[in-house]
Image (cartoon, rainbow, N blue to C red):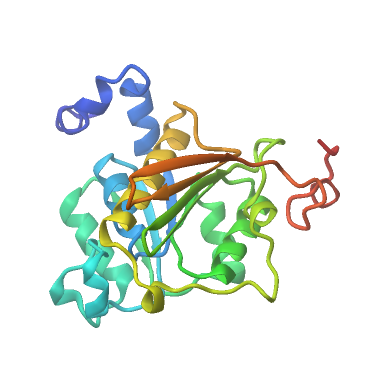
Length: 256
């Protein structure tokens, strides 16, 4: 590690749980961020500030004026431009040590699988169930930890799904994919701007713990965040042995 990097990341290196070795693990890691909106913005910025070596930022949308109330990765002059590319410019200005690969598409199929296979952690910062379930299936198949976040109105959720752990549920265990599942969009329901920052920053923290190999990620727990009362509740989650995505019959492992 260069002297300049020792200075930049010095406050991390001073932490016994991280140190030089942990910081070097972050610098050689790759993280995939699916969605460069309200959650992906703070998540990407904190991962970049912390020195994660490579960030894959995937988003098929362009920046709209209404995004700027909460999507701090983008500036007013980015309106009309691809979010992935706008985000890459912001990250480059924030930390030139970080390699950013903008992916201007809604990842699916082989492209999604390829991006996940390159990553040591995936942050689901998307805003629709179809993408969340596709990302979950990809992470389960590849054995890559998934940090999932959501925010709507004043309420947020956060959990970590780690297919490397036999006891860990997957996203489908907790939120089964059904035709009757109602999609709730912030474009219709609204969202409190700082809430997206709270959840996205927590996603970054969980991802850093996974990449750096320290702490206790929120596996098997669903954090429920009420920004009006500033209360966070934790609900225990269990893996569904009959889950059609991660169940024992799918992965060829004994039932719990």
